[in-house]
Image (cartoon, rainbow, N blue to C red):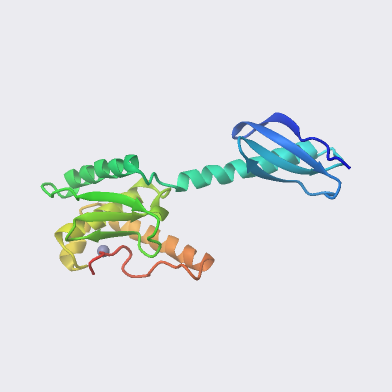
Length: 205
Ligand SMILES: [Zn+2]
């Protein structure tokens, strides 16, 4: 028996217009699900239409779109544009808190660093930030950059180091924020928890 062709149309969602393809199956009785397929969202629906179907379709399509938007918000630009944006940011923070400090040789987002928020190589003067930070409030990310910049001056977590960090006024608030995130990550992903201390350590430690 040939399957009915997908119904192609456009619907209006809370996140804007979206092209969809509705594929009906006699094996489905009640549930409606959706997934991305190219520029469309494919909706798998029962053969028999119900009165509430349109609303259910919109809801599953919106769920796909929200998931995609959240994933976009969380992914930093790992390429040269992302790195140069970070360099500008680091220079601004240097100007505000560590005037005269030579900027790092490089500062970049990395995805292979799930146990530390940031790291600094003192010798190479490079800073790496975990992609997990992207999507967090700007002031939290700034505090991690400040932490790593402070390591370029003071490698160890000494009182002098923390005094440098606290030139950034929201340092303690940001540490509390990140501690809360770490706690949540630990509850969800027991196998990939970030190290508890230090919050954001030097790569040379
Ligand atoms: Zn540190």
